[in-house]
Image 1 (tube, one colour):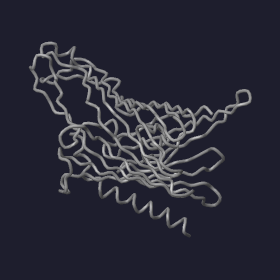
Image 2: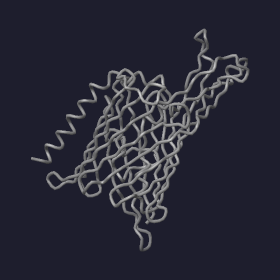
Image 3: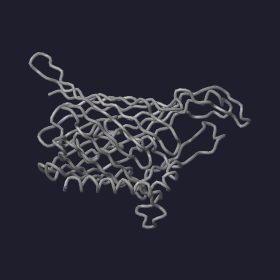
Length: 344
């Protein structure tokens, strides 16, 4: 009965995501949509949750503190194809350093396969293949057997691929953001519970805000624009148990986006709140089914862990599949596959 009550608690929290979802659209005017989409098919299938799970990859993106729990060289790679000719993926590599430290690198990618370029007269000039990336370099220190703290440095690189259609304006295709700072903490309280806190998008500038100027043309024929990435407070909670002899897991995350160029904003109108919730069950040995919600978007997933034997060594290979339904736009992600493993 107690286990069921915990699951019901997570379900009730998922209902809160519906109440928060009304303000989410405002985030579209801010930079950083790549990081808001998450990374990894395993995490996607359970509602894009991952900050409170020490097995999450790539850790440098989700929560750099997780790197403090690494014991081996870990590798992850994945790709996805969404409706409207959108594609993406993620790459991660991480390892233990010394007895208490870990280091990792992650790269997230999003792009369009065929994007129509239209001028002021609504005439189609051709097609472009814009892409957007985020890169993370993370470090962690494991303070105790259960606690770890981490820091990651992140930077974005975007390429719009449209300058060839506007030669007279001398448009600039590529943009690089300044380096931003992300802080993380994770604690494994016991065999069942874990919690995490991640603070994203801090910068060594006024108000610690990640803000910069984008020069859109080399001859100043097009006005410059401002790039702003909102500060994010992300709090996670994880629960592990068994129901009818099957391992089950529940994950919950609450996110606060501060949409203001200030150090701290206490006005609720300057904050956007959203939530994520996910569940997974190992229905057969090494085989897992998942479901979740990322705000108002529904997710499903499945995974299987293979054990590859080479000589006297066995190498785990975790293959995962996830889909997401973007309810606001009525779009599916039909293909999202990732592979992850480690070298013992």
